[in-house]
Image (cartoon, rainbow, N blue to C red):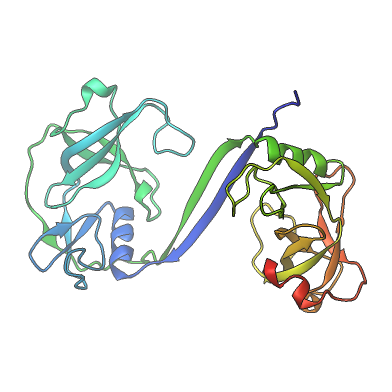
Length: 314
């Protein structure tokens, strides 16, 4: 029985976006320890504010300040906080309707245990000591004994040095364990070979294999070695450098149909200027010493493949 392969994987994408006047005022307000909502045409105050009424789609711009105290409307206990969550100790996820608001804000509540949390409990904002204009300027909520109020006051939304953009770090950490088909594929790559699997029904060879034919839905088991050479079916030029990827831009990333395969795989094209890469270009893999997969593909010097030879793989 071969060893089961597994590897830790991280999918990370820091999403950068600009802010409109309402979101800018809301986040800048948090930096200044001020919570702003927006009033709808029927008089409701939405916190956090949105730029368009979710019911009527009317544009909203009437900002109003609400209190830093509120009431828990619902909650869920988190006994094991994960990396980068607001608190390192167990806490409650809570929806809090701030005094003066008509909708609830999602955040966390610092409480000693689930027995200390209940719907209807009064809470208040604990501000972060260092604030930058982000939702994390609210460090958390904490229990509060004061009575509820319904006051909200109009606010211009004007602050010095307003926040105009944010970066949202999206990240997923997990352990990947391939199945039988992909384990065979990865083991073959470590030997500088590329192996796919043939469908017993349609006879197509899929690389990388998934253990079943995506067209016929039947299991695949017959291994077929393909390549190593192949044909560029389509490609793009990458001009934005990826974080933690030691490849200088611009570079070309392509779909490559290896000889004998009926599915194109992804690969980087090197050894040729970006503006000379083309559909039909014949390429071969380049392996680095000790590498478990091709570092990139380079031109073979052969004549370009005829379009009819790869048009079904676009």
